[in-house]
Image (cartoon, rainbow, N blue to C red; front, side, top):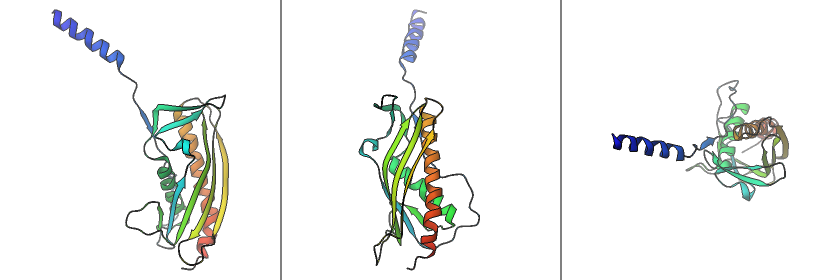
Length: 197
């Protein structure tokens, strides 16, 4: 009887010491469906995407009201943030432009494509309870021949965050990445249509 009581007390103590679970967040392509089945065409390699150095880590990096940076150890990205960003943008571009030949960098066994779409993330701020903001300069460069940019542009947008939680911050960034893909499709589409291999 004594051993059962002791076991129950130990179990209660151990469960009280258990740490909260880690939550993982993803960036995903928009859930819209393509108008038609994508076809092969100009091959575009999206990436690499460069991130500000402080963001190259698995934890969500947020700013408090005073502008201090905090790493949320129990709130993590499901994979490298730069890779998830290029994958989401590549999938969104593929669906929007109707091209199945748009890929996220790196793709083992594939060259650089006909065009390389470089993404320079200059700012990515998550400020729970305030806003998420994303600033990206981009260039579409041919991989062969004339290396002058086919198209280039700049994206700067913020998304209000109604709550203080990390899930809202990740969802705000997701909204911004989806909008980046939509804008890229609109600006890059005409350049791809006129591209000669």
